Image (cartoon, rainbow, N blue to C red; front, side):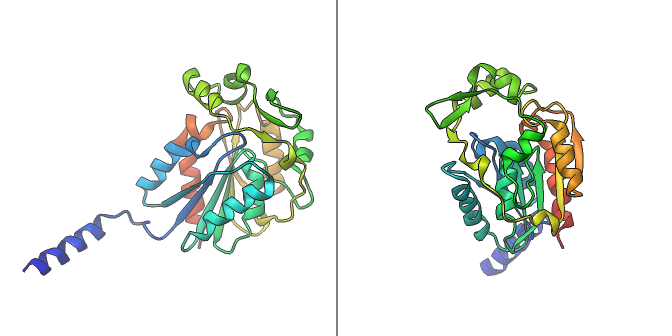
Length: 245
């Protein structure tokens, strides 16, 4: 009798699981000088939809190390995976996105380099506007004085103050490395253009995503759209999930 009760409970538990559980994975990669906590609300929304969501913590010691950190998380996924990058991490997912289990890519206000390009090449087309504070002759963080205005003007000031206080130092080395892979040429690719962005020019985002035929949506938001409008970002990621065969 006990065995039958346990079996019935197992069936009920399985039926209560979201339809997409165990079927799709999403890997989220944060931007420069930040960490994975910037994805918290998007993580919650995707998890409630039944997705297995993993978040990369980039070491920021070099572009190669950031790519390796992302590939290590990708290796932990079973089955098709949607790889998502914000800002600088657009470069990271471009280099790591050739992994066999990556079925689609999502660029959230993110760089999308072509083979042989550097991030500096892209930024020079539409110069980046945010202010930096040099910590020594090679390391920087966003300037705390301008953090709110430059990066997250549609977030509460207390939130951007916390983001600034937790900024992770990095060097300019990743911005001068030439990219080798272009998975966005072969895999379904989606993008978010942040029209109120003071960090990456909306015109740069439009230019990159038009060049690559990325399916892009415009959202009236700051650079931190995944925090200010997580539902809109989650919806784009879900569209990418549905595009994976």
